[in-house]
Image 1 (cartoon, rainbow, N blue to C red):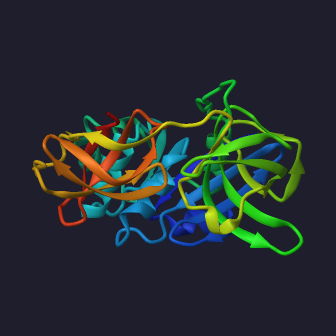
Image 2 (cartoon, rainbow, N blue to C red):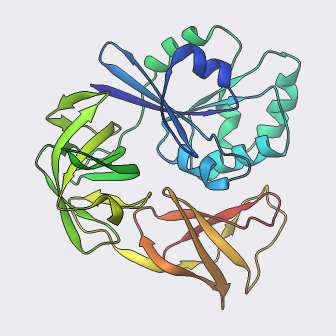
Length: 301
C-alpha cells in the first residue's frame, strides 16, 4: 500500500469533505483510502494555545495544506514552522483571489512560496495529492515514531505511529528509545487491516510485546538500531522571521520530533532537563513567552 501524510491547517470544511475522523487528542488524525493509497490527514486541534499541537502534526507530513483566507499571527507562525521543518510541497486554499498578491509577498523566502494556490473542489485537490510523488527515507534501518498508545484487553499494549524510515515487519524486534529495553512487533495494522509489513510513510497500529503502555510516551522511537540520546544542543540558528534574539538563562522548549522538552540556555548552549533521541540533525526550539514562539533550529552537540 502507498501512503500520503498531509498536514492540514485551519480547513475544517475540507477535512469533513474528504476524510473520516479517527484518533483525537491535541492532534486529530483523519483518514481516507483510495484503492491502494491510504491518506492520513493531521490537524493541530489544540493550536494556537498549544504549540506542540502544531509541530507534532507537521513532523511526519509529506504535504501541507494551509488556509490562506485568514492571514494573522498564527498563520505566520505556521509558515515559520513549515519552513524550519522543510515541508516543501503544499497547497494554499483561498476563496478570495485578491489575497494572492499579499500572500506571495508574505511567503517569499520560505518553503511556502512554492505552494500551489487552490480554490477548487476538495475532491479535486485529493486527486492532485494522490498523483503527487513524495520523498521517502528508504533505508535498511527501521524507525517508527509513536504518537498515541494504550492497553487493549486480550491484545495488550497498542501503539499508534508512523514508519519514518525503512520497512517495518511483523515479529520484528526493535529498541525502544528512552528505555533500555527491546520490544517485539506482534502485529501490524494499516487502516484497520492486518499487514505483514509496512513501508516507510505508513500510519500503523502496533500490538507490542515486552513493553507496557505505562512505559510509553509520545515521541518515543522504535528502531532496529539504538538511537543516540543527548541533553545538549547548540544555541539556536534564529530564523529571519524572528526578531527576538535568544540570551543566556532563557527558558526554551524543544518542540519537535513529537516532543515538548524543557531546557535552558547557558554558556552558549542549551541544556535539556532530560535527554532526547538525536534522530534529526536539528530540532525546533521555542519560548512560549515570545512572539512568535518559535525561535529557530538547534543542533545536537
